[in-house]
Image 1 (cartoon, one colour):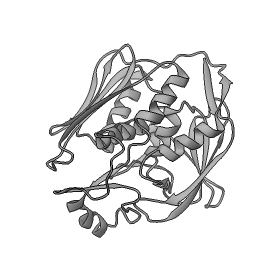
Image 2 (cartoon, one colour; image 1 turned 135 degrees about the vertical axis):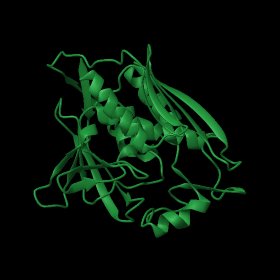
Image 3 (cartoon, rainbow, N blue to C red; image 1 turned 30 degrees about the vertical axis):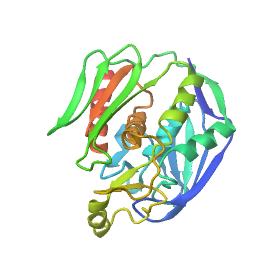
Image 4 (tube, rainbow, N blue to C red; image 1 turned 90 degrees about the vertical axis):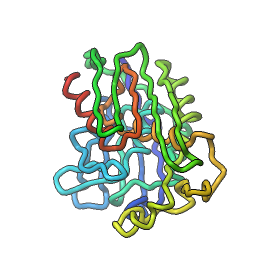
Length: 283
């Protein structure tokens, strides 16, 4: 078995979606078996927060990780980029409370990872992660997320909105077993899809102290008359972004079990509940 880390360091700076705080992130190579983990370099003793299911602290409109009294928010796009590009081990140094939103997608992270490339690492522990042997699901009202035994790892998602510009969308993406093909497919098909918001919800979210860093530069916004900031990168960009979120949230397992992950109208909360259930049956 082999793992991979970055062949060099990458760094990006930007504003956090919810905090509105500018932060700098440096992603560095990490030792084999260490996994992906955050380091709050702005705090005394540079506390470490592992990118693991057990560290999930909150799931309101983003995924937040925490350990003791220290946290880091909106980790899903960066983690999706690392996992989708095949980076198993990474030290993520951040000088603030929230990962920058950048353009609302994982495109810039993926581009930076592709530039430095990956370094293979030999794994001495030959234990193979377990696959899913029976269906696992979580649901809330008409929303659900499930993991179904399958011959390949696949992510399928459905969304349904009253706004005509979004409507009902479905998309399916397969994580191929060949490293280079998987990274290329992720970079082209999923990573560029940007986060999106609904015009009628924005004022409420702002009054609730959220999306302080949101703008038409880093999120698609949809109203009754259509998109406020077209063009879209894909006709179904919103549902592709939901797959990006799902990939990022399930990356907290440390690996992707061979399964078909199927979601409909789900949320970070449901994604994480599924990850917790998977962890319970595979360990």
